[in-house]
Image (cartoon, rainbow, N blue to C red):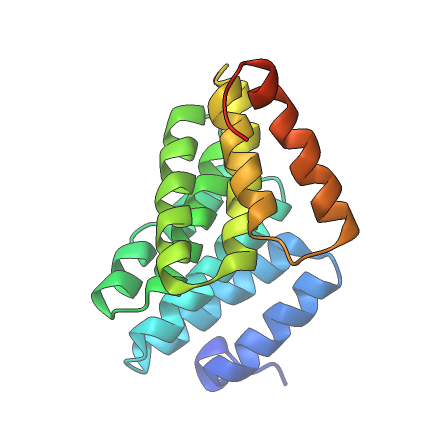
Length: 184
């Protein structure tokens, strides 16, 4: 007997989606996260539904389907912002940026990543902000904005936990500014 998705709890659907994601079955995971989102929405749990839509977006990006990823994440940053959840709003903007990057819509991706970094900084989510800034830096290089890319990468390194590698990266990233007669 094969139960319909309506008979399965949203949490069970989400757990199955996570298992598929961890197994590398990204398209299946994306569909299952979407089913979990629908189930959470039907139960009146809007924030959980938005979270599942973001997970679906991430899985679609991994599956190489950025258009589906963009569709999945649509509207979720605003849902989290309206609920006062700055961290998840920032993550949603980052997911939107990733989908736009996959579509080679570089300018829009840079804007989404910038918004994500701002929100993640406000939320104190340093590691997530560092990842977004690294993605922003790569997009800025594509946009032929090397100085902006260097600044974004410097900010990303600043958000990393202290380590020998971080110290070396910080020194390397300061070199171009010194050569230009700029910062310390």
